[in-house]
Image 1 (tube, rainbow, N blue to C red):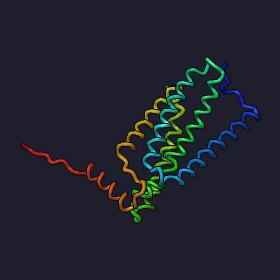
Image 2 (image 1 turned 180 degrees about the horizontal axis):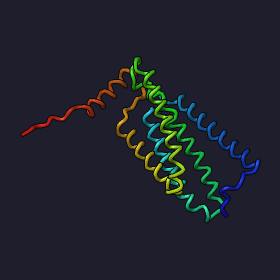
Image 3 (image 1 turned 180 degrees about the vertical axis):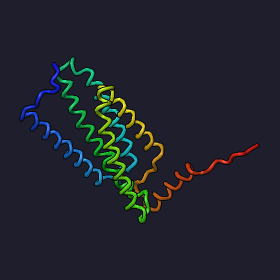
Image 4 (image 1 turned 135 degrees about the vertical axis):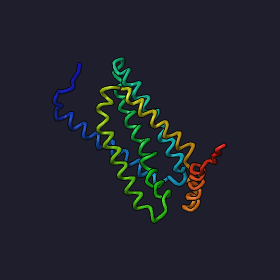
Length: 193
Protein backbone atom coordinates (compact mmCIF):
# COMPACT_ATOMS: atom_id res chain seq x y z
CA UNK A 1 0.00 0.00 0.00
CA UNK A 2 1.39 3.37 -1.03
CA UNK A 3 1.31 6.05 1.67
CA UNK A 4 2.95 8.85 -0.31
CA UNK A 5 0.96 12.04 -0.04
CA UNK A 6 -0.62 11.11 3.30
CA UNK A 7 -0.21 13.66 6.06
CA UNK A 8 1.96 12.14 8.80
CA UNK A 9 0.60 12.03 12.32
CA UNK A 10 2.11 13.70 15.36
CA UNK A 11 3.78 10.49 16.55
CA UNK A 12 5.39 10.00 13.14
CA UNK A 13 6.76 13.54 13.10
CA UNK A 14 8.11 13.11 16.65
CA UNK A 15 9.78 9.85 15.62
CA UNK A 16 11.34 11.44 12.53
CA UNK A 17 12.75 14.35 14.54
CA UNK A 18 14.07 11.95 17.19
CA UNK A 19 15.77 9.87 14.50
CA UNK A 20 17.32 12.95 12.90
CA UNK A 21 18.66 14.20 16.23
CA UNK A 22 20.00 10.72 17.05
CA UNK A 23 21.75 10.43 13.67
CA UNK A 24 23.39 13.83 13.93
CA UNK A 25 24.35 13.15 17.54
CA UNK A 26 25.86 9.81 16.57
CA UNK A 27 27.81 11.38 13.70
CA UNK A 28 29.03 14.18 15.95
CA UNK A 29 30.01 11.74 18.68
CA UNK A 30 32.06 9.57 16.36
CA UNK A 31 33.54 12.62 14.64
CA UNK A 32 34.70 13.91 18.02
CA UNK A 33 36.00 10.50 19.06
CA UNK A 34 37.98 10.31 15.82
CA UNK A 35 39.96 13.39 16.81
CA UNK A 36 41.09 11.57 19.96
CA UNK A 37 42.73 8.64 18.15
CA UNK A 38 43.56 10.19 14.79
CA UNK A 39 47.31 10.26 15.51
CA UNK A 40 47.53 6.65 16.65
CA UNK A 41 45.52 5.19 13.74
CA UNK A 42 46.40 7.66 10.98
CA UNK A 43 44.29 9.85 8.75
CA UNK A 44 44.78 7.76 5.64
CA UNK A 45 43.62 4.56 7.33
CA UNK A 46 40.59 6.26 8.85
CA UNK A 47 39.60 7.82 5.53
CA UNK A 48 39.92 4.79 3.29
CA UNK A 49 38.27 2.51 5.84
CA UNK A 50 35.47 5.03 6.32
CA UNK A 51 34.84 5.40 2.60
CA UNK A 52 35.14 1.63 2.09
CA UNK A 53 32.67 0.92 4.89
CA UNK A 54 30.26 3.52 3.54
CA UNK A 55 30.49 1.92 0.09
CA UNK A 56 29.72 -1.55 1.44
CA UNK A 57 26.85 -0.24 3.57
CA UNK A 58 25.23 1.54 0.62
CA UNK A 59 25.45 -1.64 -1.44
CA UNK A 60 23.77 -3.52 1.42
CA UNK A 61 21.08 -0.83 1.67
CA UNK A 62 20.31 -1.42 -2.01
CA UNK A 63 19.95 -5.16 -1.36
CA UNK A 64 17.70 -4.62 1.66
CA UNK A 65 15.48 -2.21 -0.29
CA UNK A 66 14.95 -4.88 -2.94
CA UNK A 67 14.20 -7.56 -0.31
CA UNK A 68 11.99 -5.44 1.98
CA UNK A 69 8.78 -7.23 0.92
CA UNK A 70 10.10 -10.71 1.75
CA UNK A 71 10.45 -10.28 5.51
CA UNK A 72 9.24 -7.87 8.15
CA UNK A 73 12.75 -7.72 9.67
CA UNK A 74 14.52 -6.36 6.59
CA UNK A 75 13.25 -2.74 6.90
CA UNK A 76 14.69 -2.64 10.43
CA UNK A 77 18.02 -3.91 9.13
CA UNK A 78 17.97 -1.01 6.66
CA UNK A 79 17.61 1.39 9.58
CA UNK A 80 20.55 -0.28 11.33
CA UNK A 81 22.59 0.09 8.13
CA UNK A 82 21.76 3.80 8.00
CA UNK A 83 23.03 4.22 11.57
CA UNK A 84 26.18 2.27 10.63
CA UNK A 85 26.64 4.57 7.64
CA UNK A 86 26.65 7.60 9.96
CA UNK A 87 29.13 5.84 12.26
CA UNK A 88 31.52 5.14 9.37
CA UNK A 89 31.08 8.69 8.05
CA UNK A 90 31.65 10.29 11.46
CA UNK A 91 34.58 8.00 12.26
CA UNK A 92 36.18 8.35 8.84
CA UNK A 93 35.91 11.25 6.39
CA UNK A 94 33.99 13.68 8.61
CA UNK A 95 36.50 13.43 11.45
CA UNK A 96 39.70 13.44 9.41
CA UNK A 97 39.09 15.80 6.49
CA UNK A 98 39.28 19.08 8.47
CA UNK A 99 42.61 18.22 10.07
CA UNK A 100 43.94 16.95 6.75
CA UNK A 101 43.14 20.26 5.09
CA UNK A 102 45.02 21.95 7.93
CA UNK A 103 48.11 19.88 7.11
CA UNK A 104 47.99 20.27 3.34
CA UNK A 105 48.16 24.08 3.21
CA UNK A 106 50.86 26.33 4.63
CA UNK A 107 49.89 28.85 7.28
CA UNK A 108 49.47 31.82 4.92
CA UNK A 109 47.08 29.90 2.60
CA UNK A 110 44.93 28.21 5.27
CA UNK A 111 42.24 30.89 5.73
CA UNK A 112 41.60 31.13 1.99
CA UNK A 113 41.73 27.34 1.67
CA UNK A 114 39.16 26.85 4.42
CA UNK A 115 36.84 29.41 2.81
CA UNK A 116 37.14 27.66 -0.57
CA UNK A 117 36.64 24.22 1.00
CA UNK A 118 33.58 25.45 2.90
CA UNK A 119 32.14 27.03 -0.24
CA UNK A 120 32.71 23.85 -2.26
CA UNK A 121 31.03 21.75 0.46
CA UNK A 122 27.98 24.00 0.52
CA UNK A 123 27.86 24.13 -3.28
CA UNK A 124 28.13 20.34 -3.48
CA UNK A 125 25.38 19.84 -0.89
CA UNK A 126 23.13 22.34 -2.69
CA UNK A 127 23.60 20.67 -6.07
CA UNK A 128 23.14 17.25 -4.48
CA UNK A 129 19.96 18.44 -2.74
CA UNK A 130 18.50 19.60 -6.04
CA UNK A 131 19.55 16.51 -8.01
CA UNK A 132 18.72 13.79 -5.45
CA UNK A 133 14.90 13.81 -5.90
CA UNK A 134 15.37 13.32 -9.65
CA UNK A 135 17.88 10.51 -9.05
CA UNK A 136 15.41 8.75 -6.77
CA UNK A 137 12.65 9.17 -9.35
CA UNK A 138 14.79 7.68 -12.12
CA UNK A 139 17.00 5.14 -10.36
CA UNK A 140 14.80 4.34 -7.33
CA UNK A 141 16.83 2.23 -4.87
CA UNK A 142 19.65 1.82 -7.42
CA UNK A 143 20.71 5.38 -6.61
CA UNK A 144 22.54 3.91 -3.62
CA UNK A 145 24.67 1.85 -6.03
CA UNK A 146 25.78 5.13 -7.62
CA UNK A 147 26.81 6.53 -4.23
CA UNK A 148 28.42 3.21 -3.32
CA UNK A 149 30.61 3.45 -6.42
CA UNK A 150 31.55 7.05 -5.61
CA UNK A 151 32.59 6.04 -2.07
CA UNK A 152 34.54 3.07 -3.44
CA UNK A 153 36.41 5.35 -5.85
CA UNK A 154 37.14 7.75 -2.97
CA UNK A 155 38.43 4.86 -0.82
CA UNK A 156 40.71 3.64 -3.60
CA UNK A 157 41.96 7.16 -4.30
CA UNK A 158 42.77 7.76 -0.63
CA UNK A 159 44.40 4.33 -0.28
CA UNK A 160 46.67 4.72 -3.30
CA UNK A 161 47.32 8.49 -3.47
CA UNK A 162 47.11 10.06 -0.02
CA UNK A 163 50.35 9.86 1.96
CA UNK A 164 50.18 8.61 5.54
CA UNK A 165 50.43 11.39 8.11
CA UNK A 166 50.59 9.27 11.27
CA UNK A 167 53.47 10.32 13.51
CA UNK A 168 54.81 12.94 11.07
CA UNK A 169 55.42 16.63 11.56
CA UNK A 170 53.81 19.27 9.35
CA UNK A 171 57.11 19.70 7.49
CA UNK A 172 57.34 15.96 6.73
CA UNK A 173 53.72 15.92 5.57
CA UNK A 174 54.35 18.93 3.31
CA UNK A 175 57.34 17.13 1.79
CA UNK A 176 55.20 14.03 1.16
CA UNK A 177 52.62 16.14 -0.66
CA UNK A 178 55.35 17.88 -2.65
CA UNK A 179 56.65 14.47 -3.78
CA UNK A 180 53.19 13.46 -5.00
CA UNK A 181 52.63 16.83 -6.71
CA UNK A 182 56.05 16.67 -8.38
CA UNK A 183 55.11 13.29 -9.78
CA UNK A 184 51.86 14.69 -11.16
CA UNK A 185 53.13 18.10 -12.29
CA UNK A 186 56.31 17.06 -14.12
CA UNK A 187 55.95 18.07 -17.76
CA UNK A 188 56.53 15.33 -20.27
CA UNK A 189 59.22 15.96 -22.88
CA UNK A 190 57.74 16.00 -26.35
CA UNK A 191 59.80 15.64 -29.47
CA UNK A 192 58.72 17.04 -32.78
CA UNK A 193 60.57 14.58 -34.99
